[in-house]
Image (cartoon, rainbow, N blue to C red; front, top):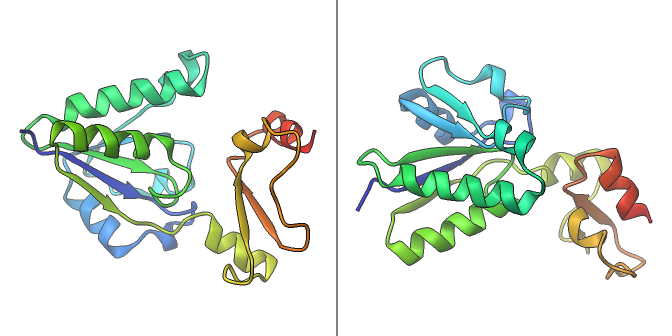
Length: 176
């Protein structure tokens, strides 16, 4: 059995919001794989680890399912090494990260150690900007799912935060 998978949340993009635990892991790492370098924290990461990204996979692939499958397969292969693999994701690994769900399942199936180092998600800054309290009826939705529905499953009198709005096209699909 290899060293396993450690997934680190980089927060919402402000370097000041990277947790101390995440920063400590990054400073001591030899190598890390980021889902993307297009994140506000990327250029502020410690100089020591060799950093790789999956941006080329996004550029070459036809759809997100193919991207996620490639990322997961690559990381599972790397996790089998004695030192394992360090995977960096925007925000918190447990909020809107499809690769993390798939990695957790696969690691469990094959008995690989699996660890999550939480980060600040996109929700906290969004709530602060909107002046909302998440426990006051907040509804959270995924833009990909919303774009496939004929009617959004929201309570009309409660606030909604929509994640995964990564482009104008995604926003247009949700609007329609």
